[in-house]
Image (cartoon, rainbow, N blue to C red; front, side):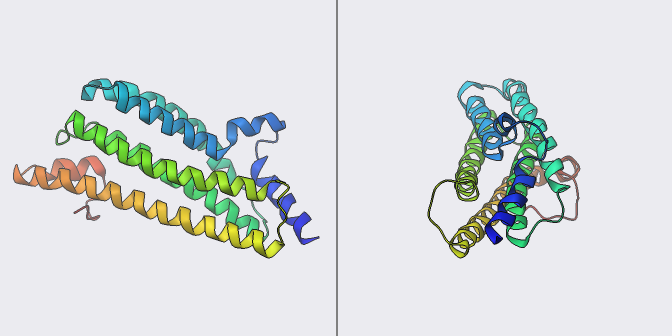
Length: 210
């Protein structure tokens, strides 16, 4: 009975658009993350100038905006049992990771203290972190779906908790990576007595990036 209740709650998570099963392809958080990863890899491979990078980044923003609709709807799902709620929170943290990346990198593209080569290197770093996070979401999907694996409820919940902890860690790493890169720009701007411009670009002057 516990497993049935749990799976029904997961259905609320994975079918939030109330459309056919084919809609899973669109709203699968793993697919959303992979789309952003692929778009970012394309930026690194095809962008030779900062302006070219800005243009190519629009595809990433497009995929991100499609994903926001899914994540925003997921936030509204209420009344889940404890373990299904942990699945929900894990997926939402994947949304946080993409949100940190897209919004921060979009600002970095207009940052005069980063060269095109440096922006490419930063994008590579984000790609690695996003990819590792998406692998965990894929593992989570296989656990919560009826995969034919023979597991007890406790084994299933333990793996879900492990996935949650790993994605939580990666969200922290993405924020740390972002802050460190912004810190580099801030120190460069400070040498030119232009740090106010950088603080204005990235917002919230009270937050320390260095």
